[in-house]
Structure formats: C-alpha cells, structure tokens
Length: 147
Image 1 (cartoon, one colour):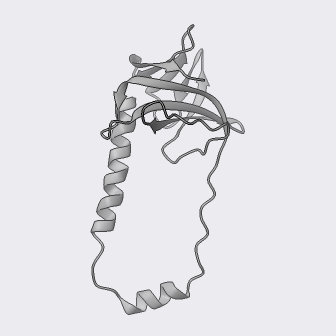
Image 2: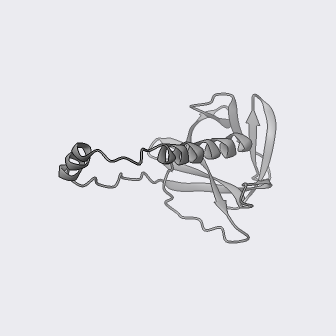
C-alpha cells in the first residue's frame, strides 16, 4: 500500500512534468487571443473533512527523505485515507484537513475498512491503536498512532 502511494505520487509528478515539457515553444496567436478573451478561471473548491486519526509509517520515507504519515478523514457519510509527508518532527495536523485527489475512499468491512477503488487494500486498527495496512490480505505496514 505505502509503496503503491509513493509510486502513484511519483507517476503523477512525472506526468505533470512531462506534460509541461512537451508543450511546443511556438505560440498560436489565434489560440492566445481566444484564451485571453475567456473569463478568469476560479480556483477549484477543495473538499475538507474531519480528522479521525493519524498514523506514522516509520518504515518508509519519500525519495526526498520525508517521513510518511496517514490521515483518516470523514466527510459526510464517506471516509478517506491519504498519505501526508513531513520532515523531522515537523508534522502539522489540521482538524479539518483538505481531502487531496490522491486520497482513497474507504468503507467499513467487518472489523476494518477496505478501499473502494482498490478492494485488495484493507485497513485495521489493532488493540494498541496502530494502523495495519494489508494488500491482498498480507500485512504490508504497521503504522504507529499519532492522534
């Protein structure tokens, strides 16, 4: 699960980088004129929710050496899990965090949760409050409870 999120983040960043690098150096004056006449785009609204809990994955770091943590967020009748990064001891949690596009919706399944988008990924909280991440029923990470 955690390697999947890391790889997904790298793929998204690479895709954004490639799309900006593949733009032609030529400018089309007709396209430029048309774009100039369009109304200014409004920033997209960012959904947020209520922070349910946060867990630190001490086993992995990003390519930049950042620490990984997971937030579980409720928003209405939906629950999400998302990875966040921080450096050193500088983890800042928000009571109403934004739900990022990389967040996965999860639903209750027995004594745990399962990913709506990727049913092979599941999550449980053990007796000590640690978050257990499973991929195809195999434990892949045990994350220490922060909040």
